[in-house]
Length: 97
Image (cartoon, rainbow, N blue to C red; front, side, top):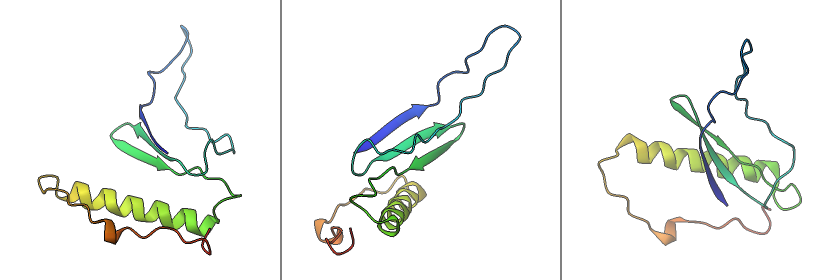
């Protein structure tokens, strides 16, 4: 699942108090694998909650690293067209999960 969360909500508060939005991990995955993209100021924070019953941590880290590499490549030349090649996409093998 891909979830774009958008910018963090405006700061909440009461008169005389100060509140700051904070990304919190509740420790559970809502799906087997989710890519969450959050806007924090001028940056995007990418988080990958996953089910440890389905994926190994090493596999999840590799998937996240590859996804971030793709985002970096796409944003390094935003004026270039994107061509998808289904042969370049290698599925995660059962032995890796």
